[in-house]
Picture (spheres, rainbow, N blue to C red):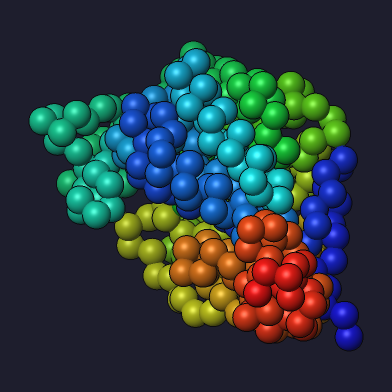
Length: 373
């Protein structure tokens, strides 16, 4: 049987060459929110990977929305110009469509880069004041966030709209709104982090209001032919927190608002979470959301093997797969997966075509194999 993992998939006017996508992966290597030569090397390499879509890492819509001082931003002319240089290289050499994930770290902002410990920054390290739906710290020893006023919320919505306009000027193919992992939008969703008693707190519908309002405001300025997706929190993995039934309800509401796909992830909103990890451990969340709502769905979470990914598509569990660490370990993962599944090779730069035979593709697949050896 032909490999379905390497069949096209359309989202609005965007045709993806296959079902393999590269997840947004924080690199903690920006300077004042600006992309650097690290991003040039990292993203250009991934654009050559054979994946149909490469997502730029979680990108803050305002400076205080960065997780760490090294996190990427799209909130002023300098951050926009820095990304333009990276995108030019990806488009010149790569074959992937390029998307960007826009988000805000909320109460989990102002921390060290992971290799420095990942703890809240000190004043000497340049700490800034995090914000959130309520004055509830993420964990003991973490700063208490400033509770956002209604005026603050309106300003953050405008920041997302402004970043969307910048993404359009940069000609991104797709935008994904980050609503998971305990960052600002998912902290509004969960009763564990949102104790408000106004229009943005209390019932599940009120807690879902801010992500929906931001999505609708972004959709209004993003071209109708370009996809706009949402990174969905499947569960807090804590009793009494956000759970799968909530996620199904939000996915349905997002679909009605014009959302083109959801990526279903989980965790990160509570320090006492009890996550049960393993290969494909988040796939059941995605499967249930897809079954209940019909929205195109992308699976994440320890998807590492070609046959594992193929099975998810073949059994109609999800529509797309998103890999992160697998691509860090092997930037040619998509090419190797195609060889394993006996599919035609996805995009390969002409400079690399001679390597296709070593990956298991038949002799003669690579152009000029005999001429140049």
